[in-house]
Picture 1 (cartoon, rainbow, N blue to C red):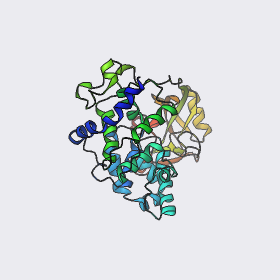
Picture 2 (cartoon, rainbow, N blue to C red):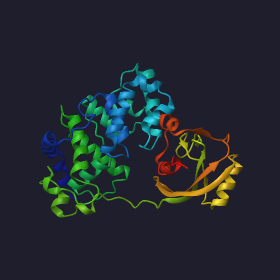
Picture 3 (cartoon, one colour):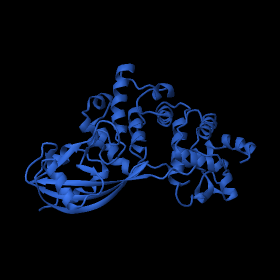
Picture 4 (cartoon, rainbow, N blue to C red):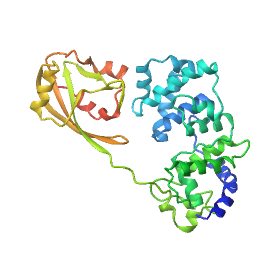
Length: 354
């Protein structure tokens, strides 16, 4: 990358991007009304989650919890049920903690500065920048993977975008060119370009990119080499046996420990390792469930950030409701419990008739 060339590019970025955004921006539920509460909820939901998947969750969440007061007062099981399927459940727990903090510290008025926003639970530099720029019109960049990718390509920056130094340099250069009066649009246009044109997987759509005439990587044919990222460590693999325990019309669930992976979430009973049917029945008996028969109930793989669960399920008809678990009918379960997506692949077997 030629640094002199890069310095010439940044001041020229906003005008063509904003002109493109004005005619190509997607209509999204949170864009019509950029109130800080709405922007905040949408940005937290969009972490690690596709836009199309977030839309119904956002509308349902806002209908149920329309403001800070409602969010702060919501019981945890209600929050988890509203979040069910989005994953990374600490996000929604931190939402409630932050809502309480805004009510207590700021009298229910959303803080506007990045520094104050980042003091709240679950709000990092990116989310703070998004809220500050979109809701309050401040020149605060929101630099995520999409933004790092498009800026690295347009400047042909071959630094490792996962390093704080490269991230900080890009944020600083962007902050200097944020256009007065259109800070929120500039933040969203950067996001939009990365989501719809300068794509992360596959060929970027350079022919329709508003920065085609500026982009060094496009000119040099290096878009497939950028952004540069250090190789990730291989995920560890954990094998588990998952128990689909049924007693009459009810099934067994239990809550996970309050700390660790999927902390405090409901789950199907499970143990480490892959057990044969006889040992699975013995485990159910040890729990006090009086197993009558055990049949295989499918396999599933769930990928977390740093590990994978490889799971074998057994459906076991039981003679009694073991006290170690909460036993619920299907309607009771669907009304009240949020089950992590790791276990949801087994629900078809769980509720299947005898």
